[in-house]
Amino acid sequence: DDSFLMRRFREAGLVTLVMAIAGGVFGYLLATAGASFLPGSLSLKALTAWDLLALPVIIVFVLAFHEAGHLAGGMSRGMRFLLFIAGPFGWVRGKDGVRFRWFFNLGTLGGVAAAMPVPGLPLKPQLTRLVVGGPLASLVLAAAGFAVFWFVPGRVGAYALVTAGLSLAIFVVTAVPMRSGGFMSDGMQLRQLRRQPAMVERRARLLALMGQGLAGLRPRDYDRESLTHAQAITGDEALYDVGVWLYSYFNALEAGDVAAAEGFLARVEPLF
Image (cartoon, rainbow, N blue to C red):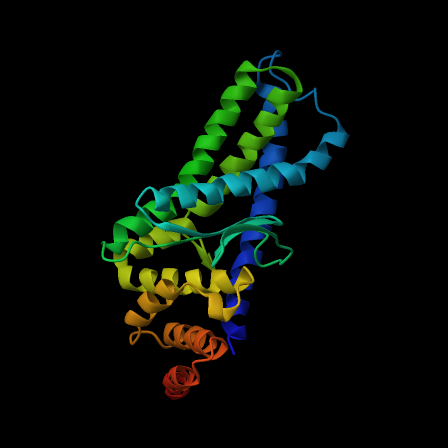
């Protein structure tokens, strides 16, 4: 089955979530400490210990803004929305259009966004805009938060400073090129996009399929265009090929096309 692929996806999501929370707490502490060096009119004294309860909400908002930046970047190049998850909130494109769903999977709480490239157009510019959109959105949110804090006193300004600190931390975590297990930062993806565009294309195609599976779509409802384009670039990486042919197998089997399902399964067996 595709449990190995899902395990790698959840691993990446968990690392993203842990890093986001760690970065968020660091950003909050940094903002609190840094506030003591600001003029007296700019202060976090409006906040109390009870305001820490709002921290999870702010973290989800910052993650959502980052993922929305990814989608905005990709869709500005014509890419089609497939999936958006931030914390427990998610929107998924299915055969009946875009629907809201709750998500309580640890692998997706750190945020997930997926969009389908435009067929027939160069993929690299589309993926570049998609990847850059997330960190850029976080940087814009951080700047906006600092601006609001500077000009608006009281609790609103203090919340804006915390949001700015968290968003700046997320920007740093995602923009710096690094990888850990199944996690790969946006900065590392951008570097690989320049050096190994074919590998990044395969990853993007496979993640689009995995995202539909994690979103709860039945295999028979997988986007057929996504499957077709993913199948067209097989043959260079065994793990990618296994994932694509397994998704194709499940899609055909549940749709009742047994002959096609057998053909896809036959493509998987030599890869093990």
